Length: 407
Image (cartoon, rainbow, N blue to C red):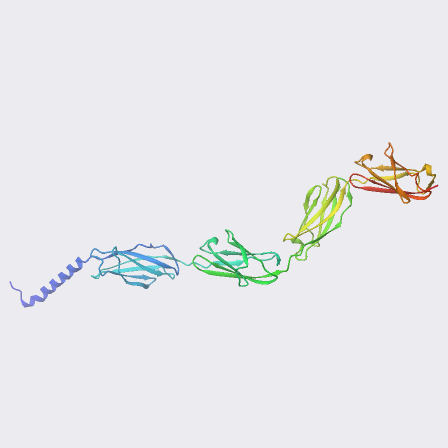
């Protein structure tokens, strides 16, 4: 039956609606995925990041366009994918980390993908000069030390640039330890000098530190001298020797004193007192003569040495037993008897010197009992003073004298 005119609009509307539905059903919506990053990945704030996505569409990629949004701001608009569906975008993050990519095909089909990244804020390195408590000298290279660090980089990866009074060619021997202690040597004249350290990390972040150094003139050599020293000490007893030390540049705490013997070698290191005295006390010296030395060294290695001779041993003891002092004797009867005692040495080991104030040295004849008999018959008549000096192998001596009148 033919349609009535009143039925045509309804039939046309149904036909158009059916065609539209069939057209929408025929279009395949695109699918997009972010391939460069996943949620939770870390990026550095301010650095350029390459974002990548891949879009697929069964109807083809002609006239397909993508737009990128980073932290709510559109950063890449109307980007066309390549033949494989890949599309990229460069962006930098300020702190939010949200990434959204949206795609729309020619038929109006749309899709999106989103990730949230962790944004890491990389900090600048830090630098601080170490305290400089030592005295600095113009005739010694100055060791400058600083501690550097970076939250992200190892100390060995940091770039250090040193300047002295604005110049970079006066430093040498730069070193860096694993814990970030950096040192450099600088030859500086007397006066004040500004030291600047510039530190750059691998991200290009820069920081710096400065310090002012006050350099003195040349280092003064320490002073020293023996204060007291016994000429001899019996074996087994303590030898006590005192020296005075000083330094025009530093205090006593910066000086080291080494005591030694030319026979027994190094004996002890004795720190000086606040008034500059250092005392060796020892009962371990071997028997004999010792040249005892006190060598004082300052913090720069300059030295001063002072010495004293101390004999470890017992001195001989002599007594003139005959004749009596102030006696008058005939020339043919002039014999002087000297009794000698020496612990640890025989009489054959002793050296005897006999002298008269009026004539040449006298001969001595040793008695079997250890006494010395001195023949003085060659003296001229008159009053004479006879002196006897006995020295043992330890170098210790004793003397005795007597006055006689030769008839």
